[in-house]
Length: 114
Image 1 (cartoon, rainbow, N blue to C red):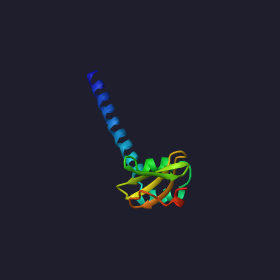
Image 2 (image 1 turned 180 degrees about the horizontal axis):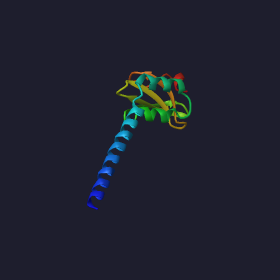
Image 3 (image 1 turned 90 degrees about the vertical axis):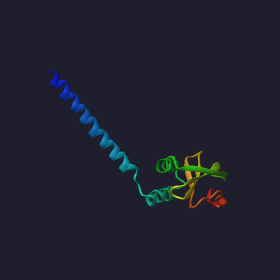
Image 4 (image 1 turned 45 degrees about the horizontal axis):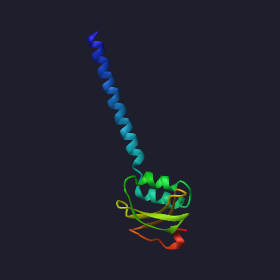
């Protein structure tokens, strides 16, 4: 009886270890999108509802607000990614990225963020 309990315990530990590794590996692969592809997708889909969600997923924990300016549906926030050295202009009303530029940009030209 003791051997059955011990075998069952080792089986559970083994299953949990393997499943944890598989989940970790899968989630790490899902997040390893090359920077060029992230920027390309955001640029291609900019001005479309939902690009804000894409921006948050791609640059989670890496966006610093640089400033607010008129544009979008009233005001837009310029967010800078230190690791990628890109600035994104984001309209929170419609969850839309309206402008993207390389470098640290505090103010986009008015015609780019309308």
